Length: 437
Image 1 (cartoon, rainbow, N blue to C red):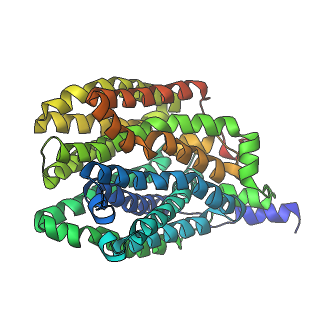
Image 2 (cartoon, rainbow, N blue to C red):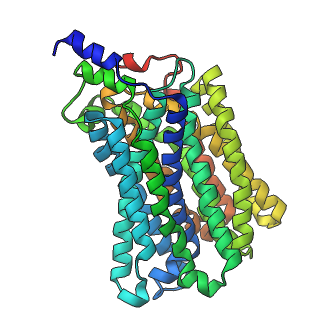
Image 3 (cartoon, rainbow, N blue to C red):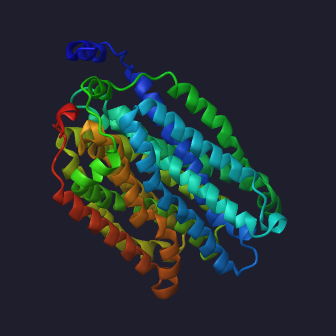
């Protein structure tokens, strides 16, 4: 085929409607993060006793948080694996594969026998399935963000990129809402024996819905054009890390604040609230469900502002406020009142939405089309190693060493690290995705 013929083929590629793009990018990340968050909640409540019963209560909790961190170590590998095929074959088919892997791993956790049934095989298999969750999620976010931004009209990339960023809020709300319902309907014995498995098993039905939506998508016009012009490399991961290592590193560091805000205010705070502050599971989950509404509200607001004023100004303000929020952790959580705890959770999750929303556009804008899936996914998931993988584990250690003020310091340091990275990044609001080199 001639170049003209290939260009014509790209130009006649069926376009995805805005509604279809929004639905497909949103529903996939909502399901994927639902899967991820039900494990986070289970790790704070039940994974330790079920899979590590031979140790003390503190050791059970630390072991559960370590299995939680395994997925974050797998996510960069997932970004390399799915990024390779996403940049070589296309966004659509890769998104379907990542959703299937994540869903299968989550469902299998729901039927995995505990330590009392199969002994040491239980934690071993749990770690393997948790690794599979991380691989799937490592390829999910980048593809969803590219699906949104590469279909976005001029001047609205952050607004379109908001839809995959809304997925975590809804996924978290669904996960915690379901755990809250189970806490209200089941006794502690029933919940620990079998009730905690229900959210994992429901993942299979949700994945079928996501697959139905995504299989109806067309390839993004930006990628179709790049394919027509033979803009492909044999090993996108080598190209990305060889020629675009700086935006990967800076993008990863910019993401650290998002992870630290979220996982300290949810996973660690849930464990601390139930274990040390004396709240029941259902009470603290209810507060989290209320607080995550502020994250959902901040997401479209922050996306609109970053389209209007730029990615950097919004992120600079968000990171600065996040640094200050770390100092609020000790006084608000030490009081232990429902009002002060809910206020702290709401502040942290609101700031999570503020800093997270622009990333749906910023990270894809840092990379050219032929390595965009790999580069954006790598930056997103490498940030999780620093900001999230060990955050609950270290927070548990820090609170034992110096109290909640030390955990708040962890949040402030993470936010300061992201602020420095954002200051080093260029403004990308007006860049043409097809012209990024």
